[in-house]
Amino acid sequence: MAKGPVLIDLEADEPATDVSQAPPVPDITQPQGHAMQSAVRLATRKPSALAKWFWGLALAVIGAAASVAAWDFATSLVARAPVLGWLVTGLISALLLVALIIAIRELAAIGRLSRVDGMRRAADAALAEADLAQARAVTTRLIAFYKGREETRWGRDRLIERMPEQFDASGLLSLAEDELLAPLDAAASREVEAAARQVATVTALVPLALADVVTALAASLRMIRRVAEIYGGRAGFLGSWRLTRAVFVHLVATGAVAVGDDLLEPVLGGSVLSKLSRRFGEGLVNGALSARVGVAAMEVCRPLPFSDRHKPSTRGMVKRALQGLFSKG
Image (cartoon, rainbow, N blue to C red; front, side, top):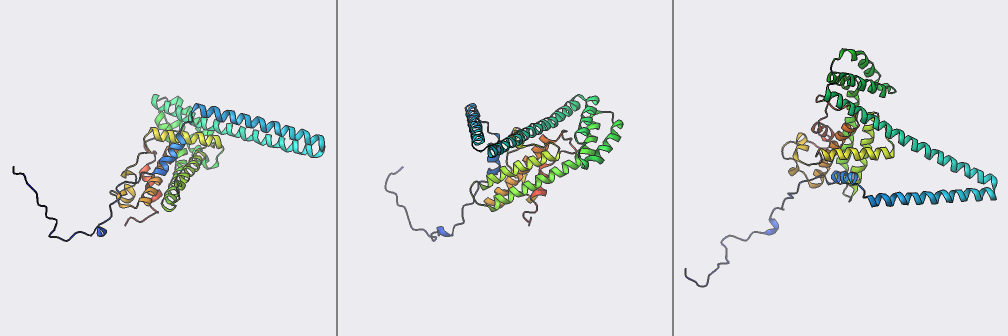
């Protein structure tokens, strides 16, 4: 080949394109529901052993210092002004009594959650072994568990009446679901849908940094506590946090924190995330993930495992929760 200079013609026959008129580059990054995923990571994070020792020793030292200071304050006040000193001593005693009552209620709440978990495990074992006797024992425990709740009276009476008609474990536990747990499932589903709407709305409309994460975590905590109360597992502060960790660990273990178009497809149809604004898409995905957290809470807090007929549909719950936030046109 011949070597030589190459002539490059810089003049173009067509006019140069105005860069300012070019369409904007689309944001191809799909919403991922960062708020709910951050909330899940915060709730499932395990503290290190060193951190546990630090906080345990810090609380012990602070408690000892506060106790000694209160004792010295009360005794010195009794020596200077007996009437006022004994009055303050009575107030301190009342405070300790209230703290003791709160501790007892926390222990009772944790015990109630353990009862729910025990019934669910026993029901799983009865279904796996097709053990009718064990299923009858679980059903009897379930009836006794809801004995103090008036809204379950009709279902309990129906269940007691029809129990002798069942001759296999799955049929008996299905009857318990139909008569006793179905109304509670509906109430829990309404709580989950309300929490999903709240998370979606706040994420879409509030642009403040970390506001969506705080809202997602607070709404999830309140939703999980309400679901537990509906199923009878009332929890205090420590019990609620323990229950929340159990729900989020279950969520992570089942892989339900993954994001995909299937979350919102039943609401908008088609490839929805590519058609939404970034902020609005994040709101919808966070709301959908919140619904998944709610379904996990129902599975953890329910005293019986879900049968195929009663298992809640996450997609249906997302559709009911988010369909009022926008129009489909």
